[in-house]
Image 1 (cartoon, rainbow, N blue to C red):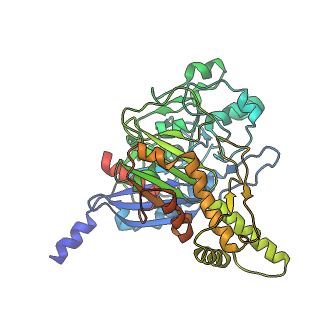
Image 2 (cartoon, rainbow, N blue to C red):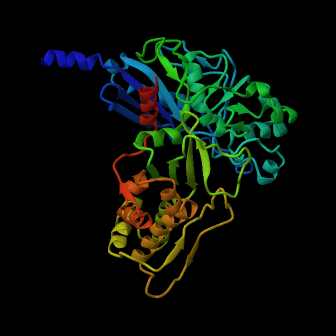
Image 3 (cartoon, rainbow, N blue to C red):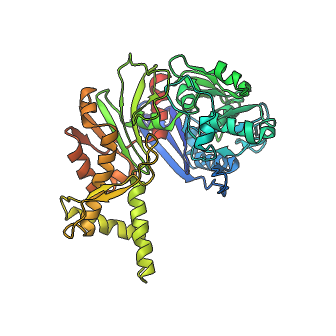
Length: 469
């Protein structure tokens, strides 16, 4: 009996899920029969290049990203990699990388590829497209506005400021699209609506680029990827890859946000609240919902394409755990000026303890230090200050409540209830480690709140392939 069990375990099929994030790469081996994670590994990419302060450029070294990806896959058990039946990728949306068809990588070094004839990755954080520049672009036929860091906006910028740069390349895509293309040996980039919508100038209702609008603006249409359905295949591996056989099916790359939601939204009546560096609150729209074909830049709610032509309603705040981190950094700097040294992690735990002893506070903190996409000039404020609410307990309690007040101002609890939401799934590194934030979540929403189902894009993309292919 034991011998049969071991044999069955060895012969299990695994799905390799990969998330190419902004700061790290994560890989998971997902057992398709038990729907459990058999192994996982995460590595930092350390790929940021020194930015040009004048241009506000944000780029990453493509070679370092792919090197981190190769090393991350190699950390997974070799015997299980031999039984990978499918490969799925998700990653950071909006950004763009350029390469040459047919020569975008080199497979000559054993069983992994290295980039060749590629640009650096211009990330979603890129700020070179000013408000004036964006206002000069044609109006998209899309429900989503175009912002700096979006792939099409970046291409427009190069058209105006460095047109010779584009002459060196024939293909463009997100970093996860590039990996899929290299694994499958594709001559052009294939892209799902999840990533295409994040580039701008893409109509999610028709699943087509705004080609007429772009053509009239002399946009290089040959750089636009071919659109394929979210959850479908892009091709098969052209070569063996770290023990994974050649000919293994590879899914078309998906958005990291959608995959993170897929990993923890177990029912259509769930909403997912993720508080990590930033904060997002989202729920699934009805199957027949279709957004309008023009942007609503002042709306705090956006609609992201999901699966099977459905959409997620998303309140995406720029202000989440980063605000608490900024406060800790500020206190640490103040104490250093006073000759006191204390680690950030140690200080954070002490602050949370202070706030747990302060169950309520009338201190009003609006923590929008970074503004919001729908209201970029709305910065932070502290009001209702008195001599009785100046303790650290009051301040941290007010700060945590402010993070929740901000996200609920974007998507009120009434909106969730009217949409039929019955439960909120709380996730994210900032929320998981902060009991005060959890308390404020439960005060902010008159709904059941559950924890422990952490959003994970690498797991989510594996689950998508397990369910759909």
